Length: 73
Image (cartoon, rainbow, N blue to C red; front, top):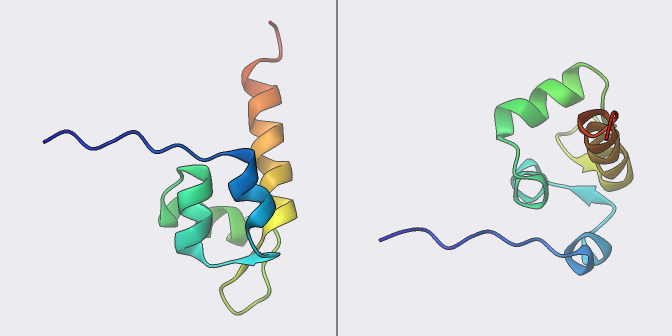
């Protein structure tokens, strides 16, 4: 059986708490936990030091990825 498409709406981002668990951040972004850990370790997104990821910095990083991908369009 095919898996249903994952749809994350702007409302899901708005309703998400300020600090996200890696699982919830993965759900919102579609990134793997390993990739999210890399983003935290590399300083791409803010972390509370206890494993939670700041939603706003994650959103900002997502926007920068999107801008980079479509830079010349």
